[in-house]
Structure formats: structure tokens, C-alpha cells
Amino acid sequence: MTNLPGGDPAAQLDLAKPVPPALTAEEERAGREAASKEAADTVLKAFGGVRGMIDMTLPGLVFIITFNITHEVAPAAWAALGLSLLFVVVRLFRRETVQHAFSGVFGVALGAWISMKTGKAENFYLPGLLWNVGYCVGLAVSALVRWPLIGVMLGPITGEMFTWRKQNPGRLAAYTKATWAWVVIMGIKPVILFPLYFTGNVNLLGWLKVALGIPPLLLAMYVTWQILLKAPPPIKAELEDEEPK
Image 1 (cartoon, one colour):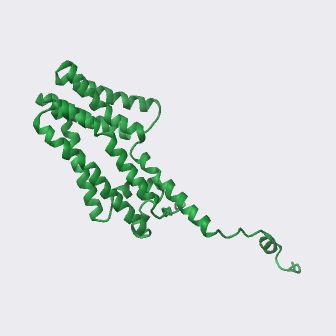
Image 2: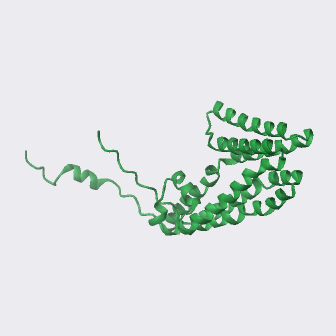
Image 3: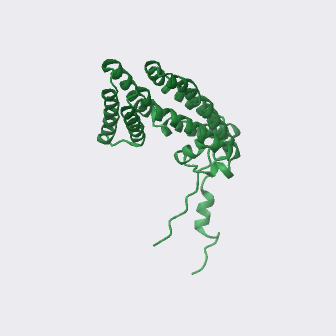
């Protein structure tokens, strides 16, 4: 077979295709801003959304209300635990993720067991207070060792996985800054609540625990969102192709 004059027809067809125009600086900036906003919007999703925050807050509210009505620890503990289990059942029925609901059940169950075992209503809140302290310490340590926990949590959701550690120093700095913001904001709760726990003032402890449940969390999420809006967009992780069997 001889070649036709003019070269390969396939090559001519490729050359005939219109070349997409190069993006302007304004379009590139808009694209980066859109990618950064999309990544920032994952903050609420990572923490279970509004539903997850409600699941974590209402059992404590039910406990303190029931305790004020009955003046007994056991009914209050069982009411809080029952509500947490109900949240899990509802999520299972609606085929939603139960990760945050299950973690809430574990914390409520532990608090209920300790409070009923000791007969002290304030001990219902002790596991949550200890968890809060441990969480803040973990956040601080993760930032110090350059594995900020906020980046570890958001990386799989944004699709960047851990590319921010080596390939995207701007996002590493942003995740580190956001992690320290969480340390400061979430650290306010134990600073306020632990002294109340030791006074044995169950009513004030319970109501303040509820009041300090969602607002600091929302503030920390908002600060993180603002930080990530100004951060470089994520670099998507390249997943290796599966080897043929």
C-alpha cells in the first residue's frame, strides 16, 4: 500500500481540530478559587454536618432535663442513652452513615455507666470532658509533627489524600493553621467546664455543656473554612491503576 499525497489523513484530521483557547489569568484565578471553595465546603461534611452536631448535643440536654424532673441518675442516664440509640436506628433505617451516631452512643453509654455506678450525675459528662482534652492534645501534637489532623481528616474527602504534605506547602500551612485554631477554640470548653465539674454543680455544668456544644464547633468550622478559602487548591492524588489479574 502506498502513502497518499499529503501525508497521513488521520494526522490531517487531528491538525484540523480546533485548539482550545488558553485560559486567561482571570479564568485561572477563578478556577483556583472555585477549587479552593469546593475543598473548604467539605469541612461541615467531615464532622457529620448539622445532623451530626445535633446527635452529639441532644442526649446531654435530655439527661439534664430528665435529672431535674426525677432527681435520679439512672432514669436520666437511660433517657440519654435511649435517644442516642434512636438516632442510630433512624440513620440505619434511612441508610445514612452511622459513624458519628455510633461515636455518640459510645460516649453517652460510657457516661451513663459511670454516673450510675458512682451515683454522681456530674460523672455523666466526665468522658466527654476527658475526650475534649485528649482531642485538643492530639490536635496540637499533630500540628507540631507536621501531620495536622484537620488535613488528615479532610484529605480523603477532597480527593487530595496526603499530597498536601510534600507537593502543596501552601495547603500544609493552611491545615496547620486550621488545626491550631481548633486547639484554641475547642480548648475553651474544658477550661470552663472542668472547674464546674469539680464543684459538683450538675445543673450549671449540664446546661453549659449543652450551650458550649454546637457554637464552638461551628466557630471552628467557620475559621477553617475561611483559612481554606485562601489556601492553594488541593492537588488531587493520582491513584495507581490496578494490576491485571
